[in-house]
Image (cartoon, rainbow, N blue to C red):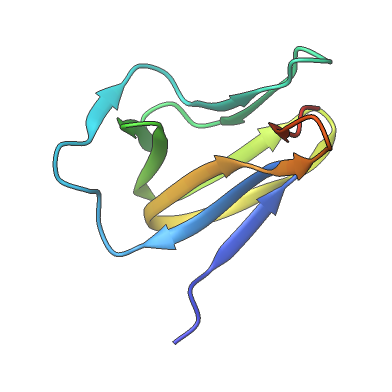
Length: 102
């Protein structure tokens, strides 16, 4: 079975079976901040989803039938109800492996 994977600029979102035990709810619906532009990858509809942290990992639980992921520089993506792991893309440089920023 293929696991749905979504890319929204430098943010990757992959479906997972469930939230990990001990995941901690977070306030807000911002998945990532653009450090260069100040724009954010965020869920548009209040109440359609919840964010969780588990260690250094971020999880998104879409609780409505769908939620829209938006950012000023990318087309919106509709995510169906479910649980997702969220991470920012990384890149290699000789100095270090670093997170890609908008």
